Amino acid sequence: MNEKKLYILLTDTGTVFTRLIKSYTKKPYNHASISFDPQLVNAYSFGRKKPRNPFIGGFVQENLRSGLFKHASAAIYSYTVNEDQLQKINAYLQKIEAEKEQYRYNFLGLFGVILNKPINREKAFFCSQFVASVLKECDILDFPKPISLITPHDIQETGSFQLVYKGKLVDFYTDGNHIDIMEPSFNMAPLKI
Image (cartoon, rainbow, N blue to C red; front, side, top):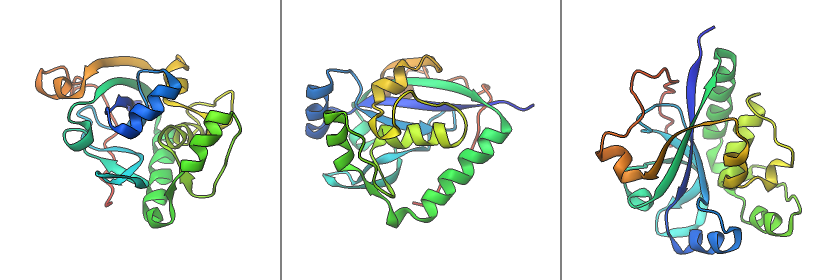
């Protein structure tokens, strides 16, 4: 069976909004994304649609080499997946991308995390809720608590992923610390966002 890698990125961009989240969580990373190539060219998450406005959010394809991520700290994890899981991931993301205008950022869900009360909203995710939903819906990982309560730290603590890089994202790209290009990965065609 052909196995490939997916990558989970946990980041701290240092914005006012993320500092506010971090002041509550007391954890080093407050944003989660998922990628399928070792160069991390295409990463997907729920976040800002407009870099200067944290209140307009939804499904996004992130450019990890610029904007909010330019000075971000990160932990990058890999996970080996099989062909069946890859097909499920691709179908799941393509469906969300095709309906992206109907999806919203789940701000209310963040309050649910604070209150430890799941707030499930149709077609709405916050970043770690989205990544956890991809992992769960595609039969990669199940979580011991509701998806709408999953934080980046919860993803990190599962112990299911292999740490491949920790540090500044800019150093990942400029110091040759990127993931070995020969490592098998799933190169999903970039979504048209």
